Length: 120
Image (tube, rainbow, N blue to C red; front, side):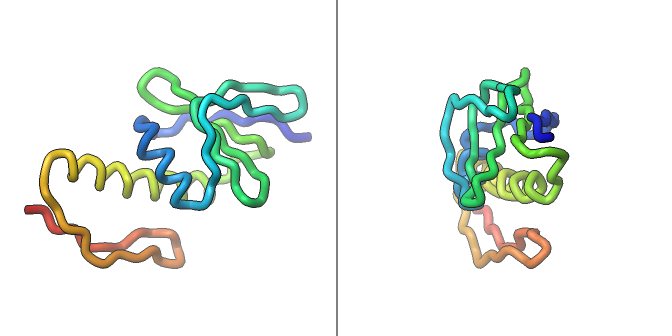
């Protein structure tokens, strides 16, 4: 039986999170309700994958709570989102305070992003 699962995450920037979801191929909607077998939760961001799976994010103080519409805890998906979120957050923060040049970068098979960033 499916239900909504809630997990606390160390993500705080909705803009970086939205970009991460888009980078990973999710269609992103704002202020949507996640629903699963009678359970319902208002979310600030919801990402819908091409497989139909949804993952929602709800502000909870200074952090975001992850709300998933499938049973259990899918660490692979959450880790991919965290990885892209961190990448986008770093680029956002560096570009706000300094000039930089992004060198070549790639995503390895294990999901890690490897690249060069030169700060001036």
